[in-house]
Length: 115
Image (tube, rainbow, N blue to C red; front, side, top):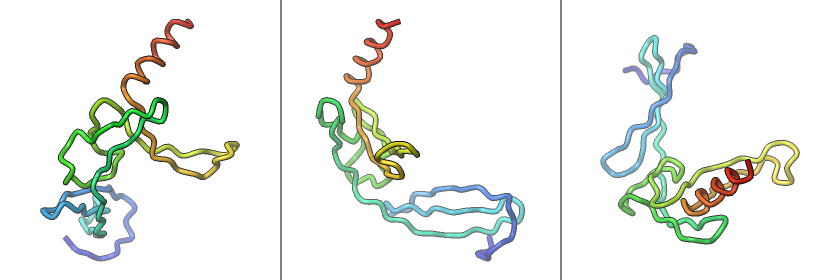
């Protein structure tokens, strides 16, 4: 593959894990095969607290795994990034939020009972 800047618009984004635990993210041209490399090093995953009840949500994988938290597996909960849109007092802010399975289940049951 060439490492040249291509004027093609038909590109796809791929992420490849390296032996040292970092990730190489690439934009690869589908038409001519050229690629653009960018090395990104993610910190170790840390425990997250449920935004509702405060329960600790642990990474489901080895603490040495390095990836974006929203791409990792979590034990008994969800972790993701959300962004506030126009109209919120948090407009343009982005948050990493964790919610445990117990709180999700409880809220879903509550909503189901309302209907």
